[in-house]
Length: 156
Image (tube, rainbow, N blue to C red):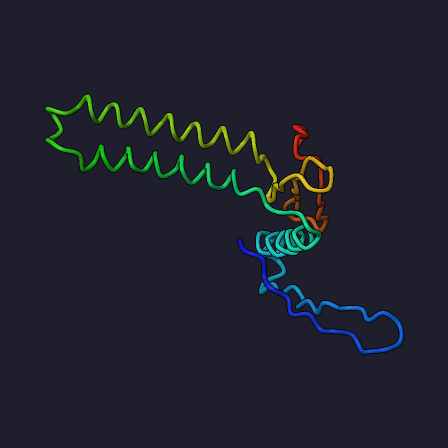
């Protein structure tokens, strides 16, 4: 998800230092009883606040997941549409299925190791190793918890 650009409104000119204020649109959720939509809206606001604080999202994780996914899909497409008919090329199909399984497993392990429950992982910034931002909203609960932890913390 990209960051929404927020227009800045300059303060009034005075003898004191002018301050810039940001006008943020209120969070709008169509159905407040849908926990997934509510959690998604709150996560988007948390993401925007962290990114506005100067942190940058680590896109290496997303790019690696895309590359592994494309490689797995390529193996599956080659197994489906590769040269020859099935009985004579069953070793090729078998190899493609094994490659698909290995690539999908690698993508899932990479995602669970690098992201975990986090919806935002940032690059190192200001002497910090980076942040992992994750949240929880239990079902049938109104208690939204947001955790900002060190990027290398494996406890989340």
